[in-house]
Amino acid sequence: MATYSFDLDPVSVSIDLSVGHIAELKIRDGNRILSPLHRAPWVDDLEADFPPDTPANVRRLSGDFFCAPFGRNDIEEGPSHGWSANSAWDHIETTRQENGLTAVFRLQRKVMGAIVEKRISLIAGHPFIYQEHSLTGGEGSVSVAHHVMVHMAGGGDLAISPKWLAQTLPEPLETDPARGRSLLAAGTETADLARFPLADGGVADLTAYPLGDVHEDFAALVERPGHSLGWSVVSRKLECDRIIVLKRPDALPLTMLWMSNGGRHYAPWSSRHTGVLGIEDARASPLGHADSCRENSLNQRGIPTAFQLEEGMASTVRQIIGACASGKDGDSIRDVTVETDRLFLMSQDGRVGTLAYDPAFLSA
Image 1: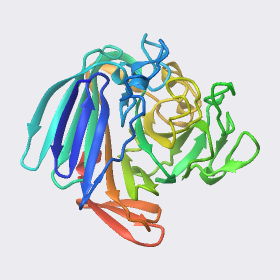
Image 2 (image 1 turned 90 degrees about the horizontal axis):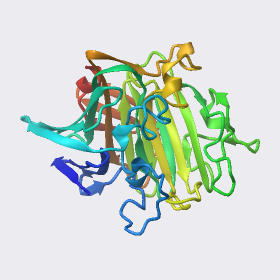
Image 3 (image 1 turned 120 degrees about the vertical axis):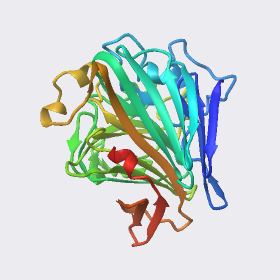
Image 4 (image 1 turned 90 degrees about the vertical axis):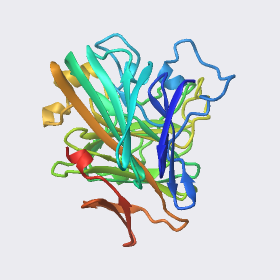
């Protein structure tokens, strides 16, 4: 595997250049080294069983990757989640500034004729990676998403910026009991994330993970209008840490949750992909590229689901991922705010944690 690694205290990053995934992210917090992102168990298994049609993004499933388009790739020929998640990237350059560095990568293929570049910046003393993806030129429209994945060995809770509603796909992710199992009721929409309907008539709290034993589920959450910062914070119980994902709601109005807890029985999943929560900030329709680019149930309500590509123009997507220790008695988060150069995490019990942070990155 060809990787490119770079670091600046307290963060180190490795990029899998064969697919553009973050292969490893480590963040130092005091005397602890945190590993906030997930890596599928088969990636490093030399004897893993892959059916012939397994896409590269599943074979190399790691950390976070950029989807262009998100999900079903049904306009331009290509694999699910696009070539940006399935094909090779080149490292272009790494530049160093007085208190930071930026590594630049370029996708070897084009997406809808657009050149795709990835820029990951580190700032000395900041427990975050500052990511930017740009699509320059091209023609037509494209949906996009980040595909952040967190592993929880003993469960955890999810705190999120205010959401307008949550909805599931018309059909569950797994429909054949011989191949897997889903728990959430399909084709459902509700504003109450703590009582999302289950297929068996019960309810589940989408902010507490896992939802149950042996399941594979997906829900799309729509940001509530009027907020300048979108955020997700996963507080992991056994790991005693918090994973923080930040975005601009106007650029990425959806946060899609992929809940993978042993609910796929076929290879390479083989019921061993457990405790994984995907936090997929997106400008997309969950139904795929074609649906994102036409009139759909989301953009009919004013929620953008694609970027328009144009020769000589660039569409830019920014997102931030970070982590911090929480301690054994860490309480869940109720709010995230920004003041000058600090990010404030406010817990349910009233405690406040602060992290060094660059607010200009998302406001640009």
